[in-house]
Image 1 (cartoon, helix red, strand yellow):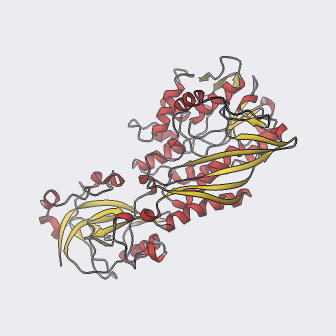
Image 2 (cartoon, helix red, strand yellow):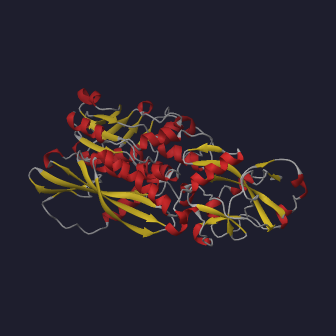
Image 3 (cartoon, helix red, strand yellow):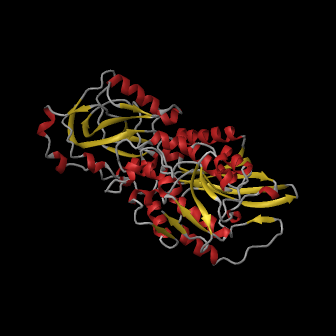
Length: 486
């Protein structure tokens, strides 16, 4: 048995990818610095580069860790052999083996957790573990397959969550060029007012509410990804003052590359939220796609006389926001390797249904209602105020943020600023002004590309306290859609 050291790669153990040792699936975990491996530094340059494989985009952070040279491989006590890793590739590129956990329909992450217990190495987190993995070239080694290794779901997507939305300005230009839609007197709300859902009257006391929403992974945990996507899709119905009743799953996924277990977890997460909301999932549609996406098409009901849209706001109305902002900053910071962003709190916010907030808004006599997602607070407030024929004022210090987000947004390297957030801020320059004293971090916060955010309600000042949220400003007379942030 001989080993030729090539480099070091830090990966996170997740369901979805496997490692290959000379064409055979396996894992090597547990390394330490120092020792007999010191004579091999030249091989780091002379031999194969672990970046050179068909899906190198999945390992964009690899070079950051190669400076931390591997010197000794620790034997895995209890394992049949010491295993070396030559590459990390999607499952579709590998020879499938009968003992592969994905084919056995067991949970690869459970296998890895048992490996961690055996080795006494690695840190547990959520549904995976964080191990330092030796990247080696094995010349002579006979062993049997043991387990599976994967990278985070978010590394498979070009963006995250609602931050993947097309720019609001571009969408507006496209919609403006469409021919006039078919007119039907039963259509109460179409796309003209940039509302969260369409509304179609069936009879005087009953209307259907239709919406659809899906996006790429915003977190690495497949179950939580499903929960967040479902919560976000249902929110559009709540934002119309309606009640969701049915849903259809929308899935873009590659079972060949990621395995059935990952898809199962995503669907389980979405189903859990639907059950909690009293929504029946009737089925769905799926397509093959290497970049995972999940969401729902949702149908709800509402009394036509009680529909809440963007257009009903009145001058003097208080603006109430029912959830803190900053999920876009948290997930972007996580993806870019910032230490300890408040992910657990962000997930809690993104998986909280807007059901109670919607009911409270209706009971408080809200005049207009929307939810805050990918276009950010300013983008969605712009749509509401423009449709209402009013301007808006926002008190920057009153806008709530997820705990820890203020520090992330104050980072001079701007590692927590998502691409969607940058697009939102650029768009806001056409309709929003900031007072000189508003800090840079607060300017980013009100443009944060939020996923599954709270409701933004325009309610009478005297009843604003009845909503579970914070008063962040008010609607005022002025140029429709303009916003002043103070």
